[in-house]
Image (cartoon, rainbow over all chains, first blue to last red; front, side, top):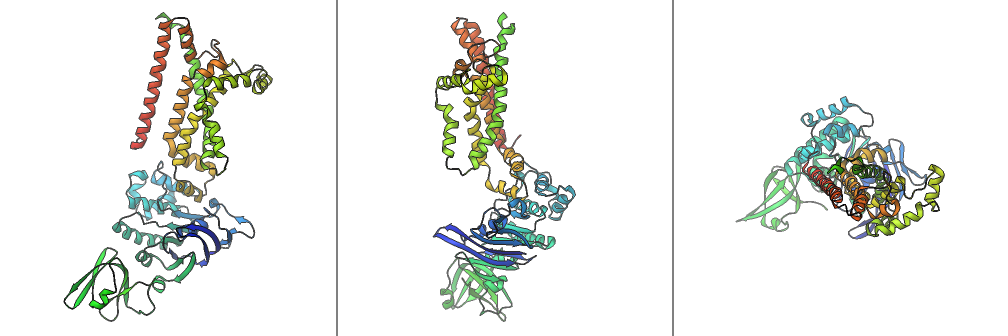
Length: 291
Length: 229
């Protein structure tokens, strides 16, 4: 469990602003930290990791004080027991995959490291150097290395952003499975709604440096007016017009779906818009994303 | 050609080699912490230290040599200290050559190392910290191994530069057999004595040596970039 209440002044594209976060992350949940880029999502992760220092406030993890400005407590990153998966993976190129894991461990235990690699299907790569791996494999190794640290908290900074759509989708499943298997509290930075829907138990939506909404992905993203049997978030790819109807083509992850609209309805959408495809009764309907 | 077999012929080379090896070792010990500090500190006086380190690049060796001579003589503060500690002064002694060479070759070691440190991604260092590794462990296990080409470059260039040094050595070392008469000084001597054949032999050996050293550096660095080593 992370109990965080901090303030940190940041410089963004629109000038200075304050990141104010007051929140409790429950144990074993998979949290998505969601919001536009430059809003302080990565900074929040770095503050928890101890790689940056808040201007004031406190961070308490499992009853252990990691930061408290009033008592001048600021644990160095080395003492915080977190696993941090960086956006660029930060694998050590001069070490093999196994050596990367062994180095990450707090207590040297080769058996355990091999078991983590085995669990994540990385058996064949044990003695390979990171530079000989594909993007997806590198990501898996970075995750395995963070797990090998046996962290209290797993911090993932846009871990899948550098991958192609196919690998990304596959790794989303693996990420979720790994989280469940090791019973961790995970925090993942993402600005991809479909990814958040697929992975996260809960979402912390940051807007203008403050918490805008929290809750399950559907609570946060889907408009309250909709009580649907199923719903997916996708991107509107094209709008075609035939006699009396229009057809919207929507890309959802790897899949393409077509939804019938009335020409009047179709006029309210534009290509590239984020939309929800939902079913009410029998026919799928299209709704704009709430922002 | 008999001169080649003569023990005296090779002595300047063994002396040069000894000087270059000792200097390079000291430069590693000194250069790594210095470059580390320069690369990662946020001290606003950093440019001052950088300028001091780079001074030997622009100063005429005779200027450096002159000040070394003042410092190293019996009346100089370092020379006087040396007399107290070791019973001899620094000027016109091998020890003086070592100290002079270390200072003179410092930028040739520090600059490649500095570039190496700056080239290591911050996330690599931060990753090691989150794994509970101290700064020292991170330096030796993560940072230095990932900047091998810079370490090789720094070491070899500093070594080669010490081998080729002339002006400073002439000023502070003089020309004492098996003490300060290094190869570059020996060439100067032979030319002055009009022994062109010997001067030629010394020069050719230094020429070939310098070429091989530089070739080795580019070969190693090239290999590293191509993913060898």
